[in-house]
Amino acid sequence: MPATTVRPLTILCLASYEKGAEFMRECKRHGCRVLLVTVKALEHAPWPRDVIDDIFFMIDMYRRDDVIAGISYLARTEQIDRIVALDDYDVEFAALLREHLRVAGMGDTTARYFRDKLAMRSKAQSGGILVPHFVPAINNTALAEFMQRVSPPWVLKPRSEASSVGIQKINGANELWPALDRLGDRRSFYLLEKYVAGSVYHVDSIISETEIVFSAVHQYGKPPMDVAHGGGVFTTRTLERDSPDLPALLSLNTALINTMGCVRGVTHTEFIKGTADGKFYFLETASRVGGANIVEMVEAATGLNLWREWAKIEIGGEDAAYTLPARREDYAGILISLARQEWPDTSAYTDAEIVWRLSKQYHVGLIVASPDHSRVSELLAKYMARITTDFSTSMPSPEKPTS
Ligand SMILES: Nc1ncnc2c1ncn2[C@@H]1O[C@H](COP(=O)(O)OP(=O)(O)O)[C@@H](O)[C@H]1O
Ligand SMILES: [Mg+2]
Image (cartoon, rainbow, N blue to C red; front, side):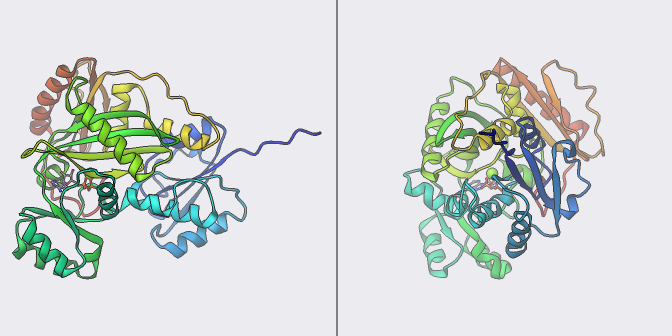
């Protein structure tokens, strides 16, 4: 019998934001055909064109019928094996397209648990995971009852945004009703919840056939909302290996991923440790790598690149066993701030532990890494002060996410 030629796997990537180059590069290294769908506005972004077989631009990637029609047209001539959402905003459409074209992978129901903060809260709660008291911003009686039962402050937050966009702190009923009025018909896309003062942590994981095969736990400096709204330097760093919070966060993360039903891929999950009661509350989860250069930081601490590992897992699908490469157990920390200078010069920052520098207009950023946790903390403290003096500026919080 003549040998049948094996067709390369075709991976369709959706990216409404410029990211995921390393994911696409890894797909190409494995011999895949890489297709990218993005928006017209990003036509000239520095996509890794050398590994992309074909690139398509849509005027708007959020119009359901247009997306279905466009990708189905493409599917007349391409046999699409995988559909991957590189950015959080693409997760629903990737799921919608998988369902429509009957491509394997995460479907609508699970995608909603990773995108809709209301759905993920209800689901986490049903799995016995502690969440801040919450109520959908839908029914007036339910909202009034919530405000009677749960003391302020509260946060009014969009169900499907990212990067703290659109989140408002609400101090009482007199502030809530006008805020809801301002939202008008958009209000049902919001939820109201108890503001839990505390420290925010993130757990970034790799999932292979429902098993969590890798997790890295980090703690943000100032809570992300405070940085987004009040300015200052965004920081996060690897949690100390012997911290009593580590096993607690890892087991919560496992419970959460199992409850949500993620089969394969990567996740970025956040928890708040309440200052008042010392308990961990589930904040949010996402079926993607963390933003704000968390990938580079995790790589500095562990040697593993989450984009690359995610690509391997997607390519393997349910048929191929995934083996996690050896990981290091070092510590890393990142600092990012808005800068007054268009291209801030950090060449005077010379500590040997600096392993990465951000190159982004009007931003400054560094990653430091060391086998010693206290050294990372020391460097973060030092650079936080220095960056504030040398570069920082305060700007109003963005209307649109920045990463
Ligand atoms: N219930 C809450 N209590 C205290 N802070 C909160 C609460 N919800 C959100 N925040 C703050 O807002 C930030 C963003 O909220 P999050 O739910 O993670 O949305 P996203 O990161 O997608 O914008 C958090 O990192 C935290 O600083
Ligand atoms: Mg968040």
